[in-house]
Image 1 (cartoon, protein in one colour):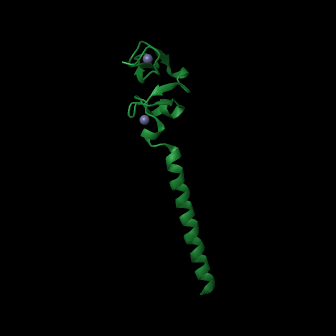
Image 2 (spheres, rainbow, N blue to C red):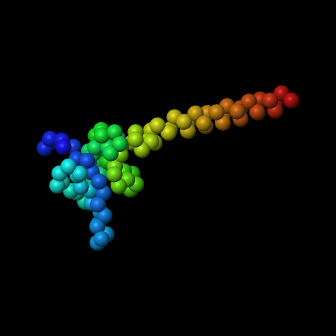
Image 3 (tube, protein in one colour):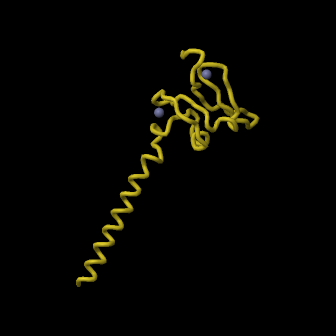
Length: 100
Ligand SMILES: [Zn+2]
Ligand SMILES: [Zn+2]
C-alpha cells in the first residue's frame, strides 16, 4: 500500500440509485463522477499516474492511461500516412491519364 500522500487509484462504483462515483482502492477517498475530470489517477495497467479525461470516465470502470488504452495521439500519424498514400496514388493515376 502506498504512503498516505499517494495518487489515488480509482475504480468506478455504480449505485442502485443511479449515482456513479469513483473511490480509491487503497484508501477511503471517494468522489462523484462529476468531479473526476482532470484528476490524477494510477493506471490499472502500467501503474503510472495519468490524468482522467471525459473519455476515461465514459468508457472505463478501471481507468487506464492513454498509452495502455491505445491513445488517439498514437493513431493520428497512421491516419495521416494513410491519407498521404491515397493522395500520392491518386496523383500518379492522374499523371498516367494525362500521358495516354
Ligand atoms: Zn487513495
Ligand atoms: Zn497505463
